[in-house]
Length: 88
View 1 (cartoon, rainbow, N blue to C red):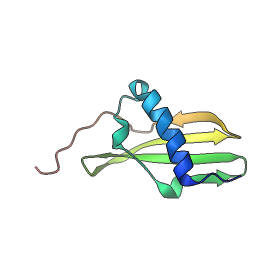
View 2 (view 1 turned 90 degrees about the horizontal axis):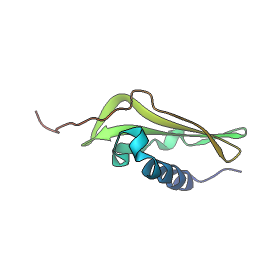
View 3 (view 1 turned 180 degrees about the vertical axis):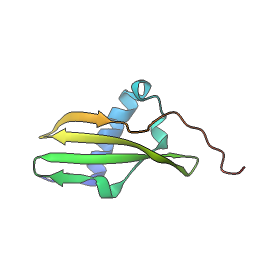
């Protein structure tokens, strides 16, 4: 069955809040990419982009891979603590 994107976001945000110390970034900096949420056969995918003070961090992402309701993998390509000021 297909989960609504809002349900996926609620579940994955719960994971982010619970394990924020392991990730090293503020979960508030992670913005769900709605186009990334969805099923492919028995797998379900969701990706977050890192955005700091409204500025997207190039290439920084957090991805969830879910298989039949079980979290299989969380990957964090180029995800790192970041700070940015909106003006120079």
